[in-house]
Image (cartoon, rainbow, N blue to C red):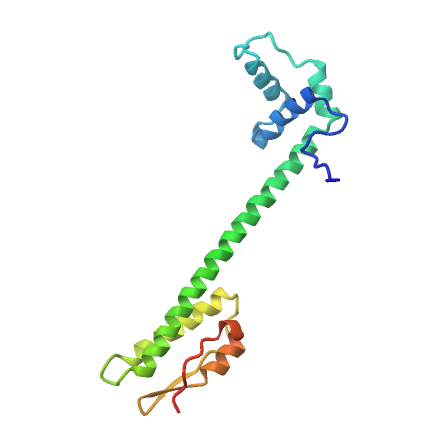
Length: 184
């Protein structure tokens, strides 16, 4: 048996009372009132807006109080907010994963380029700065704070010497480690 939610029809609530509640529930919170519900019901019945034919009679007020409309509508608002927040967070996570993958790809390409570059081909210092930027962005995407160990890259005799595998594994774990070939 499923649990009955407060915004659903309650066991002792008539269909008409629930229809009136749904109108109340679905109004923006700042516009919710018994008079707004009655006006909408009157309009749906073909009464012209502003006529004196429809007054707030006792049964609407009893429905509102007896079926706890205010608390039920607030529960519905909280439910919708939770759904909206979850969808927003899911989208943020997807975006972060995409950015992380892009930075990792960029970092991998820079490491590959460093391994094959000659001294006259490009400005190695600029490439190293780009690699540092990629590493910093990856750390930010992973929520790491400043001061974490960074991948150390050194150029010696025009060859790239790194302990990249070990550092990447230590910093990012096996699944995030890029495994460039270290020259011997």
